[in-house]
Length: 306
Image (cartoon, rainbow, N blue to C red; front, side, top):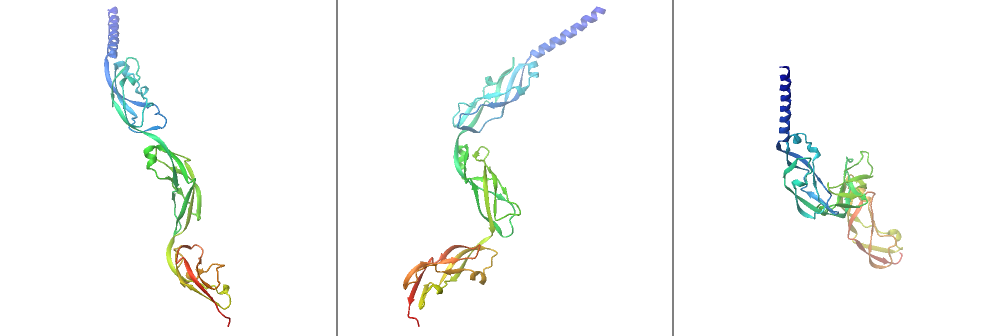
């Protein structure tokens, strides 16, 4: 009886071992996700769309080996070294998956991928500075510039051809700002594009909000420059001025009196009739946009001194 239980125990151990050997060698199938590793496309080309990050593969092999398999050790290598620009269909083949031991790949989903391949081009594009912040009341942006004013932008052909300019990221203007604010700002680019340089200097000019007005002013006579006994007639006697002025500057008599319209220094005041330009002097912060007419006719007469 003592020997019988030993034989019984040995039989159980052998049965269990046999069961593990049989079940471990049993062929089974399972699906796993594996990453796609791609080689770089030829120089001057880039893949725009359609490139997969992972695929599903159907593995077949002994149950024991599949049970102990780490899917993270598997990958699919896709060679893009010979592709051309355009729509390219890339076949995904089971034999290109590197497996371990007796494990085989019987199927791949999807079995192909369709990618869009484009040429990489470069263009020189103007830079447009962008700002953000709070301005004082009645102030506005009056001008902006970037240095350098243009940058070389490189990327997929469809992306670069669609661009007309390059904007900067928002440059924050300080609360206690001056009429001129300078600094540096990175460029705002599409995901697949790059620029050289990728950061530019920016300059913003701020000032009072400006409005356009028309005023009529009388021509001033050059009494001090006329020879004694001479007279002068200017036609027309009034001119119309199109001005740009700060909105806060009132359009009143004081404003009009600060404007001077007169003949230029050194104008020929000898006897006769001639056409000449005239000068307009304006208060600080006011700009002349247009003058009508742009010239006047003068007639100078010399008579006897009485």
